[in-house]
Image 1: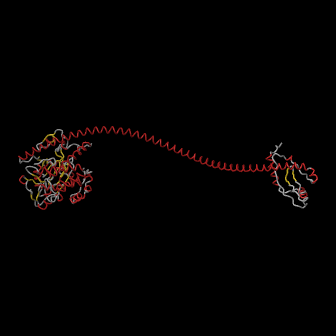
Image 2: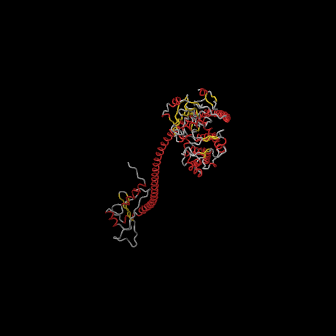
Image 3: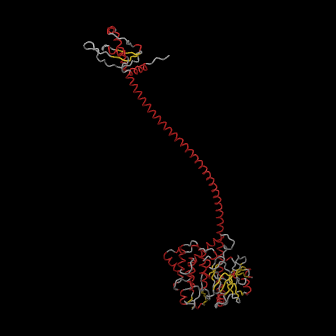
Length: 589
């Protein structure tokens, strides 16, 4: 069973059908439309539905002609409160005017109803328009809501994508955080290990500081003992000088046989040769449990015999820690036996011969002081003043502790006190010595004085400072000092020279090498006062380094504890007639 339609649905249905019928299509309706009186209102009902209505047209002078145009039709819709069953219908048969007049009262009532329905219909149209507007607004709102929903959906998708991106980034950050935490943990473990090692190193450092403090005290004690020993040696030298002043005799020199000399040098084996010059050759030997240096003079040299006698005469009269010690001689073999100097000559050490270690600036300072001390001793010797006259790097030998000792006394000269006041102590027509080291005035005039040794000492000093050969050395140093770039020509293999000390030494060397003798300084009052404080400071550093270094040799032992003959630490030291201290066993032998 179908449900009754609501008034809205009925209205919509009537309106749709009414709008579809814009003209009468039924032939009967068209005939009625044409033949009906214009003053008649005609309602056309099809299948119970009012589909067309013609209004009555009032006539001014009787009835409208039969061929007149019919009035316009109007569409209408039924009021929602009026049902189709209440409406009256027009028969397909012709409605005659008399019948209409008889039903005039009913017609008026029906017209009123239709007017009322028409009013309601108009009202419903207004409401329908309002509903349409509302529906349009609702549709706009819906479209807007759909757009907003779509935008919200897009934002949601973007947010979802962003969310997944953030989740991915979060996972990456978590992975990085995990890796970082592992790295931090590893670094923490490493830090803990390093802290533990640091604690151990600190403990070791404290122990080493205690050891160093103890070592410093031992060094101070050794230095005090050294100073005491030096004072004793100086006192013995003073006594020796007094005895020399009262006696013209020479000290005892051991006479050696040819067999001893040949045995010591293995018959002068060429493999034992350590040096050679025009005056002779030097061999390393082993004599009476002691390493020695045997100098065999060249028999073909016309001056070999005079040099042999000269060295015996000089070295038998003087003893000094910085003069090479003459142990014995063999006149038959023309051989002189000296203490062995294991570190060779200064010339070889400056050239680093046989890959020898370069001399440090502290050692070079001490060597300069040693040479200066030896020259002061020779020049001030009493009763005979001695001029070496052949001072050069080749004649400066270094012992096992790098203590410098002068050698090569074959051409030296000895003068008595009566010559001390003279400017020229000796005149030589043929000056001897190495050209680079020879005093220019000695070359030009042949006059030999202690100031000739001062010039040679200046060249040696500058060579130690720069490490360069003697040729052109004076000009290079002079130019560097004037331009303030002395550091550029210093020997870098010696280490970092103190700038002030290097400049002082350079100026002393240049002053010693003045062309005119009167401009050269005296060694005792002028040069030694500059060298003495340098010697003390460098000796402290060398003593400290020697004590702290661990080695198998005797390099760390002060030289005054070593026997010059046996080259070993003295267990039973005795003072010999020459004023030096030796091992008792060596003296007895």
